[in-house]
Image 1 (spheres, one colour):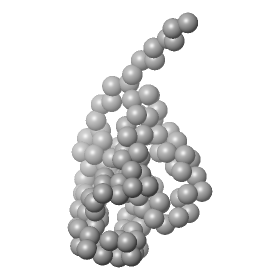
Image 2 (image 1 turned 30 degrees about the horizontal axis):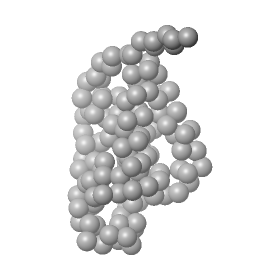
Image 3 (image 1 turned 90 degrees about the vertical axis):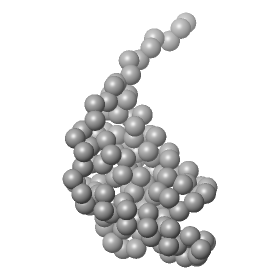
Length: 132
């Protein structure tokens, strides 16, 4: 995993989760199916607190922006933020960036606690037949 800043989407994992959620919706999956596919894909890695933070923060934020955030994902993201999020990792690995990461997490928390926008319409991609 690589990180290049303290912003929410300044690492590989959160970018992958955001992109996977949006792609899942474009391929016709429901919100819940999109969540499940992503969470299943991370499987046992979600037992690692740092990975769980990255996955749930990106999933909650992306779904909120699409107006499709479900209670369970929101609750898990807020619980992780309430437990300090991934700040211990930043304190250990990049102490100079801790304040910026705290700001990112506060911003995410405020967004998740606010009313989300109306659900965005997702244009479902039509599958193209394979050339033989």
